[in-house]
Image (spheres, rainbow, N blue to C red):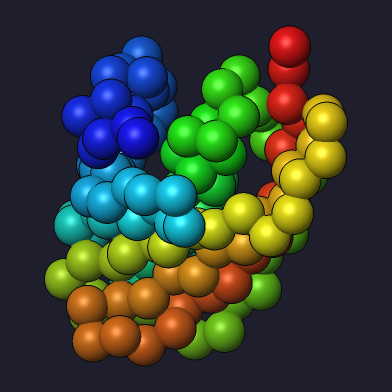
Length: 131
């Protein structure tokens, strides 16, 4: 079983995620959890968390759970549905799980909540398992 530290080492060169302030906080066979404290640079002109930040944390949480199970997996396709505006949040959390997989493909879903437990967005990703 891989640990949070193992997965942090695996992704240590992901400079965009590091700059965005996203951290891996939990990993197991069932799911991965990533968290980001919300800073001023995450906000758009309406003082809401920017959609690009929400997509980034979704993509990364999927990458963590996908590579936990299938090393060298890259995202092929992702969709996101913004459910609620993320206003005045202290932090956001993304929880990802794998729905299904085949020899060279996996599909996962990610749900992002704020520090009050409000669902902000949901996403789905397809990953290509490179050999």
